[in-house]
Picture: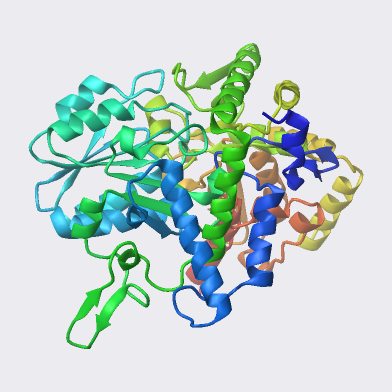
Length: 405
Length: 140
């Protein structure tokens, strides 16, 4: 693997200063920074071959359509899906979940049906299902969590009944970092013939994702959290589901034949891709995937686990600091509070020291309610971060303590 | 002092500090000095909920002037709340409605009143003006 200085040199923004201090970027759970090769790729699309995909007869349109379809093939092999038809591009994780919640709801959900989620979910994996349940008269069932921030599997097994129509859970919690036992969740659901959607927003960038081994029915993620551009995301679905479901959006390019009486839809994957798609984003995402593969996804994962253990040790050594989420299975995300100091105050002062963290509920209010708190400070690390940056955070926290004492 | 004079004083006070930490230390001190809101007003009716921090704001009107007391769960927010109280409390409804709050921008705390920050402060300013409008309407 490249050494850390080579890795950091790949990301131009990591060199910059904020408030005259070197940037310490610990908000990777919200969005990751982009390597130069991704920036160059997106730049090249616009400079060299920008043309609307699947429409033109001309050179540029052909070239961008081909690059876009190659991006689909790249994503397919990256997550080990069976077919390129199973890869739908969307605007992001939120777009993917909203789409599936709509189409799945319209097709299969009736009054009295149930959808199972976990208490660890991001609002993006709660609200679309809630909206669908309200439309259909269905109900949400929620898997509770323990004090460590892990879901309680036994409680999950009790929730699975003949009323269950779908299970939707995160691969990892954005708020606490807990990695969920998706394999067990999926196996149990399948024994009830219930499909499972995995929200991979916090999973895809931290280790190998193999949808075939995992055997999930749907897998969704965002490009911008895996070093790709914003505004592009992926919805993977098993072909069997995607062919049964109707489109969640109508428009150009997703149709076969349109008359005012009746419209027939294109084949997969195009039937789910209405209108002009974010092809520069998709092409940039493919480049980001190549970057991750070149760097080594296992190497990335093991570096991140080292960072996590150093950070956990360093932060738990600080008097008055409490870490929320103590599972032994975590992505490199640490949520914490300093005794008697509001998370917003901590975040504001850390910011002025050049340290970017997130504060608040992290779009996961049910998680915060579980602990009876209003929010936390979250440091979400990734492979380009360093132990020295963790030291900077630790001394930053000491400074915060002295200011608010 | 007029609203403009109070704002100019605040701007001058903050201009003594170049360093961000000093500015924030001043805010923390101001937050500590903020006259305490009566705990009976720290209830839902007077709560302005932001997703980053909460603000409680209580108005009292004697027929001429509105006196505001307020509090926040975050100390830096409380510091800015204290500044807003200094500028807008004990004023007539008309003064409050027509006030132009430029000091926040001038002391470099503009992000704190941005709609995307959601810390309750922007909503607090709006609420102060709404109370003023309501009392004005009451008078007519």
